[in-house]
Image (cartoon, rainbow, N blue to C red; front, side, top):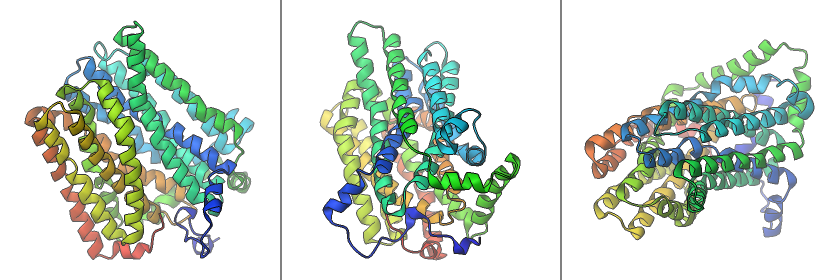
Length: 457
């Protein structure tokens, strides 16, 4: 079948002419398939902070040097390389699991059990005595989390019919954010609660991570209750006669060759890497900065969980409005400039010092503008993945490249902060957004965004 004969990617499909009623629109969110995607979204969002910001708070409280903390951004390497083994997830079976649960559900259960084991390994670490052991544990958590993301993305696309794709994506993103909040603010509150019960700080952090590992079971139970996507069953039947190696090669080469044959493909990939870099560079050091300034972990957790969550949700709606109101290029300009300039609120906070309302304002500004940029950026990534034969692998490639800024380019952030001081560091975070804006202008002049056509968010 020629690619031109295939239906459009559901994630960027045009909406139907008839506007659904309020009751019809809300009823979609209660469909069993959408609810399954919602709980899987929570499971995907939960582990990210456990090898990221929450871990950095633990390390800073344990007295680990800022430079070492900055280097821990490198443990996110699996998120940048997941496109390498994404074709394996598409093409291969997990012994016993695939036979018992199906192609996608087998991988879901398998990856989640490995994720639980990795979090438990990290829970036994002591950052003050063995940063290397912590790094290995965090790397395992990131690898299992990235694998789960690959499977959940494929499961979501294949299980939801076109009329449920929008509700499914909205539910997934909201639950993903909630999962991240549980593993940041929720985990920090939990550690404080364990500590107040008489446990030592190290024991409190260990039990906090053990509790987070147990919460991954929410996704495991969801995978067991769910049914295998019909598209996955058809794909399994269609390729049953092919060897495992042939299936892997077809999944990998088709995705990459199709994308790289496009005009200005390399420039577009560079833009994908750099657009969220300003967020990643500042975000790597936000938690250590707040602790250094004199706030407690509970102060930070309360603001992130309260006003920070509200700012994120409002920013998400604002990003959707911007993307609908303006062209894709104009929306990216708005999101790119806002998320860069918002870093100056942390420079201001560094001058003001310990002030609850100032911290709340800075966190709100960062979360609000980051959410706007993220929604618009996801719309752009969706527009790039228009061939349903390769959507899963291409999306894994693009999101992996987007994580390069958070993982590699941000690894020196701790040394920069240590050398310049906090006010100057966050001003530098604004400057690092300039290369992405230059690329944005160049791609716009080349007609890159116009060629993608209208994008529905």
